[in-house]
Image (cartoon, rainbow, N blue to C red; front, side, top):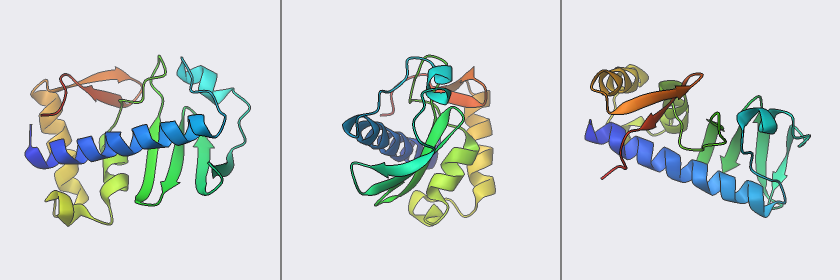
Length: 135
């Protein structure tokens, strides 16, 4: 896998994990199915842990962490390990160079190549996950 993409995915998944912890610490239950999240009655906007803004949408959530915005969807079984090119681009758009990318198109091409190489797997709607842990 392209080392730039590996680094970006690792940082993105770390931010998603941090967002999930904030959701739980704020008294909300993480879903065991994505439909459960969509129908859980959680307000569509608000604050997590008293200070971090969020915007709930469909099967996911955008969480405005101090390090930047992370937008993610829960997978079919409530997984938080999913990503796609759009989410990676949105997550890194203000700091593409820090990941070694010149533009969003390079991220898209790297994701496509990684899919073609079988290093990531489609697992629901538009989400992909790593076949193995990042090194």
